[in-house]
Image (cartoon, rainbow over all chains, first blue to last red; front, side, top):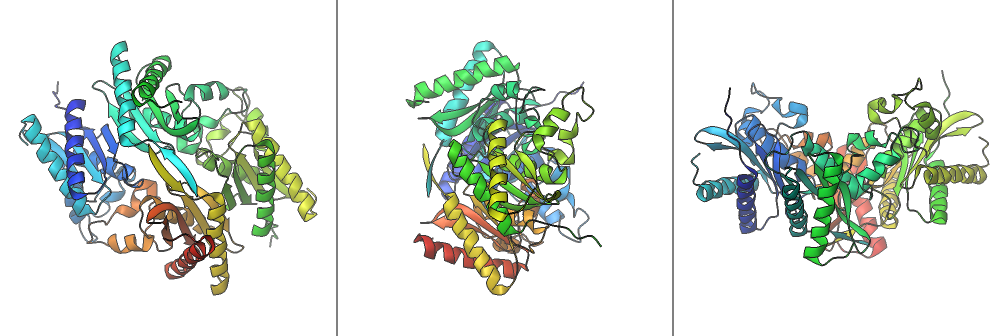
Length: 144
Length: 144
Length: 144
Length: 144
């Protein structure tokens, strides 16, 4: 029997909290999604002013981070025309995100969830997601 | 130019909070979704133990409450075979929910958002959603 | 070679105009869709206050009226469980509407377009669509 | 409670009117879509001769202009292979348009709707959409 480690909703909230804090620091309202280790949605918040088109993008980024176990910006590079992974962005019913801002959430090297940020540029989304992860490890005492 | 009232994320959280409180009272972990007045997702939480299949059901219920401006259990009755609205459950790309637990959130008679609850029976989902609305009006001072 | 009669955009506007007039008479803001004889969208208006969930329903009703060449309320009866047409509402990618308010637009017995109304009850939607057709024939001088 | 500004149907018609005028000037019949600030369809017209395949493209362009708050031709550049936003064209169920001709409609810096034009080249669609916006501001007295 497998024993799976999965973010609790309370831990998911810590990621949302860290994302909001970082979004406020750069002055950009974001869509924030947190999934469990299987890529299923745990928590979502659209800050006042977050983009409508970023709702599903944030969810897809968190899904991809957890389910594919790599940051979405890594897939952006792997998925260029001419690369062997080109085309992966249309798999999974179009929910495989290759735009930066999605990350796996790991604890002791194991994927326990995903976080996805959207509404800024890919670079801004990455900054907020990384700050959220940093906040998460500081607040919970877990190690990546 | 139209002037539209829309739930803020802080107000959406009050609905999530009220839903969790009511879910705990009946001892059933729920999926909770809150949308804006146009049916676009504002906030979501899957309580520890909430059903995976209820993620999208909760979101669809909140969407329907806001976008169709009626509680989803009302549509369940209107959508019975033999009724003139039979068939509405497959519209809107299958996102039109006719299962109890979705409600419009109104302020002074205007729809400002939607709330959707899923993981229990339809009757249990209705109980939690109604308690969430009661909590919302008490906490904010708004009138329906 | 076939010669197809098709509503012009100017004629489609007459149907929209008639729908708005009738909607105002019953005091209900509607979503109004007009398609050509092939079921492809020609004109659409969402009156101030029309329902968000009725956008696609109005379009689907107009599509069905034109493409299936019957009023959608007729299909509502034909599509009851136990009837041989039960199930038709999930065909055409879910765009086959069986809710009253969709009609073919005919000229000299030939289908030249479709009109679909949504936001009220099915009965109200039918009333507005029928008034729109009456207005259309009066304004253009065509006969059904 | 947030206070949102949204195009009325009368204002949406001004955008359609301006689009038709500009389309006639370049002698190309267009599909014209106008959405509200959340990206939901408000008005649509397919001019006599407008392309069937441009119906949904025009709607998607208007959606993207409003929901993502940028002109679609801007995303075309941002979404090139090698760019960090590569892949955004398949998000939102394939409704995120990166083909020129979609614009947000802003009033005093706030997005109140979206306009989308399709049937010509991307460059021609941009010309018509920009002329429609110019017409809109002149006719209504609003400032972008």
